[in-house]
Image (cartoon, rainbow, N blue to C red; front, side, top):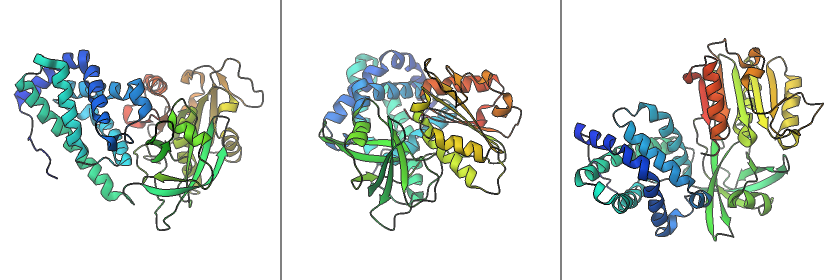
Length: 397
């Protein structure tokens, strides 16, 4: 299929795009809500692709509205957006987004802009945004194509649930093995997969992305899922059982260990522990490495903290390289046997040696809700940690 190739933006077009930023700040959410409503209603094949809960809450619309505004504000230099583009590209690849679907999005996006902006969308502004849209679309398409070419397989494959186990009252782990014996299970620690399940209450399939919570090298994938308000996690917890079959994509994601020369500080909240546990296990499996590792985990109580006893055992047996610190946010959390700090994570409460701040080669891997990560990054920056040493993964993204 031939895709539009409008060419590079002219200086005048870039100026027009920048000039629309105040309009997008005011009406961007109206545009994206209108777009998603009509696009999903009129394209049944897209219903599984988009998170139904995020549509109901308008979270998907809010994210796209913010992305359009950021694109307009940074149209002269997209460098500040490259990290976001990479994360979106990885998630698109995991969902199996196809190049021709960008044509569908273009149609509904511009219909929405015409409807919401009315006379504010002049012909010259429309032409500028058309060129800008396809400039960004081709960035995504080319990056996604590169990921597909490197992937061990494309699309969804059938996997059987060979084991289902409770980590806490609200977190369950699925152990998944492929039905096709030749399926390659290689991945990098910290990566995620997409799982497609049928949601009876909606009558449609839905796709969600979950980090792999075990180190690579096994004959299975493991994901650990927290029960949340919404359709898919409830199906995983309450409906799926051992021997059931689900559909899974090849692992993707760039939240992976970087330079292993310096200490690694893993900082997670709640079920954000899943990708960093995969990293931790991988680091500890390297018998020749003396890399110092700190894991800081935040949860409500000890009983709600997944993998707590497992990690405590690791810290005892490999205490020469692994140190841990636990924060419990529930004011009533009690545990005399588990050393912990109370309240929201304040890094100033910790021994500076655990944070390895003075080592210029230390790396920081953070996973949790967006507000949590913003707080941690701000604290690390205040301690002098440069942004190139901080790596993020939001499980709510």
